[in-house]
Image (cartoon, rainbow, N blue to C red; front, side, top):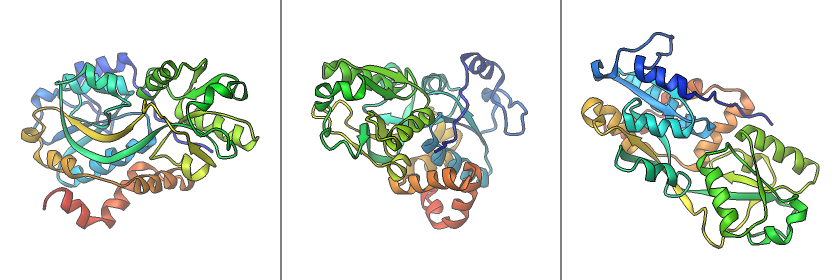
Length: 294
């Protein structure tokens, strides 16, 4: 199984963006945001496939509304900093209150939360379905030898990685954490499940893993993971600068199934996010108009 990764943006490139302005899709450089016409908007996108749905759909919608919309890709921590400094206008993948708790606390008061894309997204640890005796995080220490004392997690420093390490402390688990990109983690899980080998790893919805792998999430009696709402953060002046964008992001919402269907089209059919966005907007005019309050 192969998921499409997104390129990370380095601190160096971020500093260049701050000094020079973000690149348009054609490679040209925008003028400083201080000189923006009010019809420009920069959308922050982190390296997770599910985040492409609100990013590319909103880009397509706003361009049809006359905006010059640019998607700026970066890792989560860089995007929080960029949003707090006003170097992007919106960040469309804020997981609150659990997964990105550290970032939300660090940048509290530096931007607005203006919309919720979907609620109650389950996040935690998963094991193969064939492991009938593993149903709770509390079972992990008892059967530590089966897992070789290893939990597989996503990118080091991400909100999910931080929560995984806190969970190990709270449950007093004698486990180590192996970090990798999300595609690499899923590939490892797929291989081990195919070989009928035990594995415990980060899992969440929306994601195609629950449609493509025979897995189950295990219980978290201490509620370390909880469930999150996925929200949109925006600069404080977005409503004045870009009223249509403010209205759109205030009203956009999805179901988990809708996002996972989008992801399957990317993964299995080789569809690009921009292509899917155009198709979706063409076929959902009434819903788009409702989001725009037309």
